Length: 497
Image: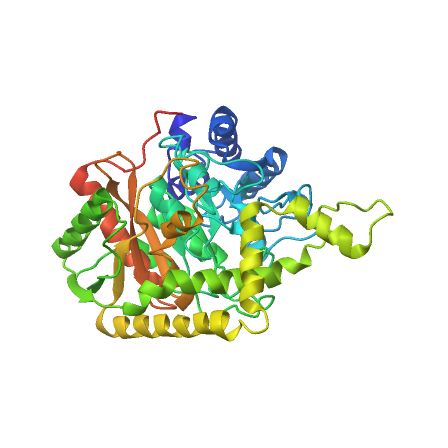
């Protein structure tokens, strides 16, 4: 089992296609790993053992019939519990949807099934994707496999923890302000936020519709590219879906190079609040890029200093609108429906019981920002800042091919450390938020361990919209150079497990 769970997704797919392994063997190995360690990690909210084994058997039957298998056929995957899955629960980490069984699959779910990817189950997350630590889940926090007393990032901490704990070789996350990249950074894994509109949002429970974006999570750049290619592409069911060919991400990942590329370093992405070890590893990564033949260009993007403030007006405003559908009348939790309360009272009681503190905080912030007399001062002003950030990116990409930065200012912090300080929690997304506001593509990949605490540090790569292939081209080159220079893969089995 230990040999199988340490394989990359690409290696697993090749062994299944050749008959060296069966999809059932691979699935059983990962299910056994989940059973052995998930009581400690708590990466999963629901494990679909029977469904996963049925999918695996179908892959083996295809191979036996001589049918051609796709590049990820039979590879297990952990799916963030924000995507609807027909027949198994989708809770979004909230009590308000506890026990809800969707009658349909999200487009991402459909594409995974069509590609014969084996869905092991649904992973833990901050409620409605609102958080940077997975502590806001109504079902309890997830631990970071590197140190179970630390957070695995958020909102997609369950997906990142499943990868780092070798419970799955692939995972799916969503990124509204950094919720794929920040968990990847603190768990030493790879996470990609595709260009906004590059992956369908149909069937993905909405938090902030102009910011939300699903994307691939993996332990290697190539694995992420293979998964990206499976889930991306135009979807007529999503009005924001881009009707254009998917960038050649797999080809880029197989031919990584930065020779002759101009790589930007933004001066706003360092300074007060950044951990010394994070800056040290980032500076080493920039030197590595130079050694690989890249030209480093210093950039000044002044509006990036305003990104956090703009985000925490835009995202709550959109969430206050999107979450209005959870009224206790149509689906999910219903409280107070005993014949003595009006419909309005049932809705109020349901929301009081079903929503957690962070969700309530953001709904109230957003409703206030959209209210009469405050709309222009708050939401309107934030949208103007968003335009300035987009223009700063446009000017930057006239000078460089990609931008690099630390993914997050610190390594994983202790569970509970920032629970009573929302502003400290929000600062975890300082480097990731500008990309969401502009709709660009970005990746986080491991760039070493911080010397202070021996915990992973992430390198963020940002590319222009619809240039997602640049992420993989640069990421693959950095990953290969890192492994060659330091002689070992970054992810090893965490001793606490």
